Amino acid sequence: MGRLFGTDGVRGVANVDLTAELALRLAETAVEVLTESRAAAADQADEPARRRPVVVVGRDTRPSGEFLDAAVVAGLASRGADVVRVGVVPTPAVAYIVGAIGADLGVMLSASHNPMPDNGIKLFAAGGHKLPDEVEDTIEARLKAPPAARPTGAAVGRVRDDPGYIAGIVDGYVRHLLATLPVRLDGLRVVVDCAQGAASELAPRVLREAGADVIALHAEGDGERINDGSGATHLDSLRAAVLAHGADVGIAHDGDADRCLAIDAAGEVVDGDQIMAVCALAMAERGELGGNRVVVTVMSNLGFRHAMREAGIETLVTPVGDRYVIAQMRRLGIALGGEQSGHIVFQRHATTGDGLLTALTLLGRMCETGQPLGELAKAMTRLPQVLVNVRGVDRGGVAGSAGVAAAVAAAEAELDGEGRVLLRPSGTEPLVRVMVEAPTDAQARAVADRLADVVQRELAIGT
Image 1: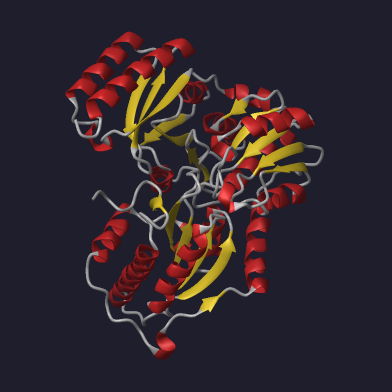
Image 2 (image 1 turned 45 degrees about the vertical axis):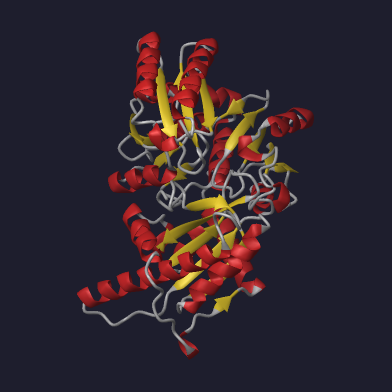
């Protein structure tokens, strides 16, 4: 078995890979590790033991989230943690609430953009930051050990889920988002695709309170249809709605709303790289970029790096996964970073990718400048990029395959420095991603298809 934690928490088919038993034990173990860490820190500082841990638990709309929520809450409370159960909210709302109420841990139940049968568990440390790899490794190792003795009597945790209190702390998240806007969005017509997910109520509400004329799409919160032909990974219906309604812009979130992609008034996609380019130039103009540096992953388009170089902005590159982007940003004090997929982090306002915050920032820039999104997106020119997902292969065999290495070398020689090739095992799904950038779409497609065929042949399971 590989590492339990992927690039974005623990994820798999609910009730098969991610069972109630695993969710309960994972919650128990996370509290055990947290409690021991706090006790060790208190001893080292010669301070009295603190109150028992407080944990925030949220979920997206997937039906499996209901039983997984029950299992997680049971595991947490059985280990003496007090639980604040916030229900269906975006992932970044959980991260924000952890910091806002001074909680010790946050748990979000979501498989993000994955299809409905999947679910996942994401953990946030105090302050709303994702857990470091070494803490996840400690939790995973501890899962294999026998459970420790559980508390009894008044020492067991309590669960708080009263509607008035929860509504108040969620309202605080909304106020926080709205306070980031430089100007109101009055006069802007926006279609927002909520992917039937966690932002189905909050995304339209936030945009309306900001002044926009909002058309909500896939916003019934029907968890059985989460990400099904909608949201940030399926933009066709959003494009059609933008054109049909004569909207200024379309905004797409994924199932847990930590992503944001956009459609301009002409129906063209504006991806995460382009959104970051718009925001980076705006922040540099205001002196808010922090050392004139941004952080992206290896998947970001070369066109982004070229645009930043022309603007005098340095681009730092990390492996795929917003956790690695965020770690680099925190380490170096960088204000902006993100992924082409739409995970964008504004460190001044958030500890993780926040699709609602990204949408407000982009729309605010449109209103601030009076320019349509299509014009703003010209901040960078995208090099044609093709991504092929090769399924049914040994994703761990990429680095060790001589046949794959030879094919990659031949492709790079053909591109002759005017493009690039990237092969990457998925951190959340059983597949290998083949990405090719080239001067033309046709060349990028041809090279990507050839490489995908080699990967399929060389790494087929059972060969």
